[in-house]
Length: 148
Image (cartoon, rainbow, N blue to C red; front, side, top):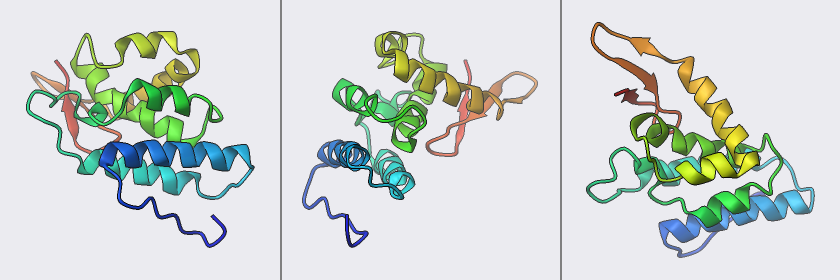
């Protein structure tokens, strides 16, 4: 932290995600600021660069994320960029699937549900309507999400 560089070493992508979230929590615990956005961008890059297996196309942004990640991030301050990026990862599945990967958690983890509501609100501002279909912009990939 002192040098402004963090090396997570040789970790799997999921372990890198866990390490980044825990690093953000540790920094917050000790009042170290100025790296929140960079950590969130690192997490966003991990999500964007992962290759989920066949069948995860609608939940591809949440392929790497597990309940432990969300439960850990909820301990960060409400508007922390890491919380926001994890909530943003749920938007694609939220709009495309009735039973998306974290449907239960998005309703029951109160602090996280408010983050999800905020990113959904932002995503709706990107709504584009055509003659037969509508889309929003995925806050993670920047690509269109066609609404069903």
